[in-house]
Image (cartoon, rainbow, N blue to C red):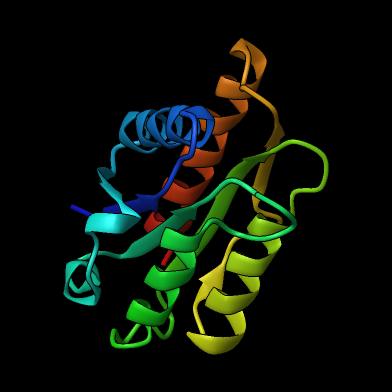
Length: 145
């Protein structure tokens, strides 16, 4: 069975809500998914997964610090060709999602799903549905490889 790991960090719970809904969508599409906070993740955690999905809110036009730190940790893993995707909540700008996507695509040489998913503020039911659909799209990409 294909496997996906969702590494995320959340300041006030909005990005965590997105992570859980993306996980639901991935599982609904028949792919195993594991959630892990960036503060607890290591490069070795990525070895047995077909896809790596990263989530971070945008805070002051950037990712939050635990995700920045994890991206440096990710450099230790061989991710070339694996599926990658990014998501996050934001208040007014939303740059973190593109920063994570660019890093996966250009530094780690991953097969990145673009664009990543950005939701302004706390996701409502429509936003959570978008997350589930994003999860299903990730699962379908993995299955197609």
